Image 1: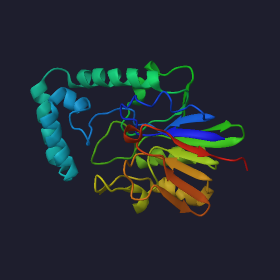
Image 2: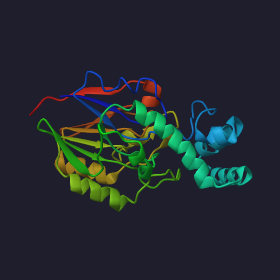
Image 3: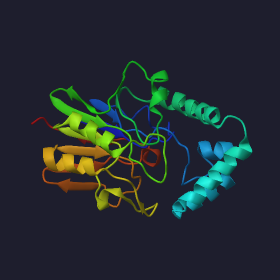
Length: 257
């Protein structure tokens, strides 16, 4: 079976419609929204509302791990903007979702940490199937998907408690392919060489790999990983790549057992 996977779409429409072509199954591992573009601070919801210069200041503070100062700047900017902050953000999110879901190929989808699950039902098509903490069997291949991220200083929209994330992993159990937005908690898979920091990985996912030894663990989240591939026992761990920059899916052929 040929799988085509994308993760960290972050508003990128170019190439998305074609991402599922010539594949038996398309899978999206989340992060559809672009709140802020570290490569081009002029892009994203933050810059649209507050301007490129303020986005650059905010990015500089985050990059320096000055999280409290970054939050103070953000709070001040929202106060200066005035109006209903939640409604303003929701409107911007809805605009991006409308564009991204229209271009999204049919297949399996799960949430990223930079997603708003409550809004997805308004944009899903009949050929989209959301899977989060459960298993789908396709031509004898058992595929489990778990979405969301864990609490971090970034305070992104869909960060869930670690015990909730682990409960979803337990509900999935043993599968052939385990898909997650975030990586297992390994230094090689969680360190981003461009951002020069460790992202939050899942210890529960690492434990699941050691216990159940799925053939593949496929994830995203870390845009520029130190190691895009890693092996634990018989499990191949693969970062499927940052779709926003790649503009192409990660394609893998998985033979039946």
